[in-house]
Image 1 (tube, rainbow, N blue to C red):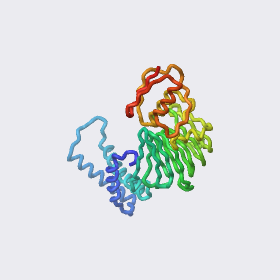
Image 2: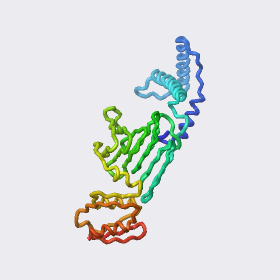
Image 3: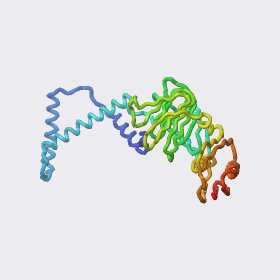
Image 4: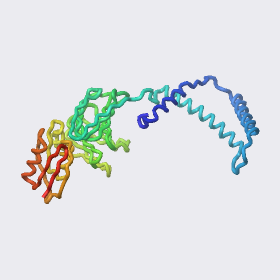
Length: 313
């Protein structure tokens, strides 16, 4: 029902129908079953005699009778199985209500989840989570970037699903950077411990464990992973309104500024040399950043609302 919400109504109707089915506990003896089978076959013979079927090569009426009888038994068996699944709660009796928080460019937000976990959601990012955590885990879905400060619960692991990996923790603070249009996903652990697995790999050998100060780098195209140390301050500075550039090229700079300030750049010309930008800006106006860049690189800019024209010489 979660995967195909458009079919929920049909599933509920089917479940209601199955729940109304009642089966007698009395079992038939082998002799009674033979008599019942004979009656069914006899009834089929009468129907066939009153409604002639055109002869067709390869069709055997006796085989057809057995196929129909097998179909009847299959329906009864499936109905019984479905009823037992409902009784044992293998079929969900309630539909989980989900909430989605989506930030456009230029907007950040802080979200408190039902268990008290705090999530800083970055620009151009989306977080999906249930209104109430139920079952054996606390699962959320992320597109983009977020910093999680997870409330510890030893019996209910916290799971973040993003692209092709899942991050599982108990009580931890960590950052995830996983934008749809970018090839790399980064999971950066600040405190606690996390367990990461690729969605397609269910083996114990495929699990990756991180310690504080370690970062998982996952390539969505090649599915390759590696673990490295990372700069904590630089990685999580965004949640405090700080943007840090370290050896950033021209394209990385433009992507970050568009996402950070919610603007669109119109570029005229190409850089005459390789850009290697280093800087730290805290709650800074976009124009002030462009002014500082103008001291190093030969450029002209024009700001018209959310549209920025950048001319490179």
